Image 1: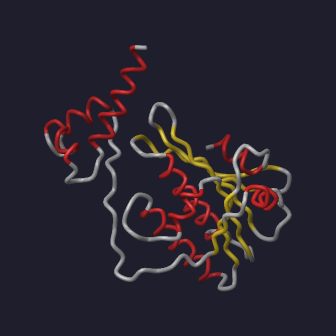
Image 2: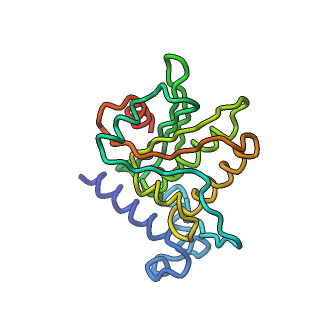
Image 3: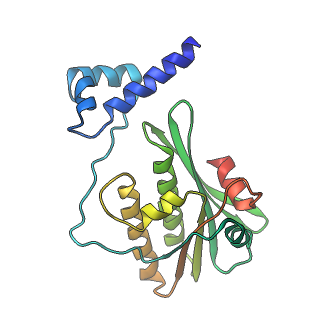
Length: 215
């Protein structure tokens, strides 16, 4: 119990210290460049200060389609692994110890390939889900061969909605990254079809189960 309380206090202190500049709660514990902030950084053993949001000079739409079907239809779509092009499943997670991470998985032949990324501490599951979508688009954009189409499945509806907007706020960094990767992919394949689709979790969907296990 003592260890659990210690972990909770540690997470709470780190969250306070990583709030945006100007936040009153953050000022109470001190910014990372203050004496108290530096002491927190030393004691906590890590520092993942939140990034400031960025205002775009010219807003750009997400040059991809997004689909959130009702559950049964979404599950049927996610189970169609014979659809053309590259199919990627993503998942993000936030552990009890405060660590966040994500996975992007795709099937190659009879086996699954993918990327698993540890994002550190002080972020939320929402951040991980958004980061996973951006990473999936990066995977598609860096393919050496023509793919024709890319379909990305995620069980996080909020992350899909975040990708459709580049407004400042949580997850904006990944929405901007997604646009850059889409632009790079379309520079190579102007007519590529790009879809981001919702799929229900824990419904026996193979790709979702793999990404969930890896994430």
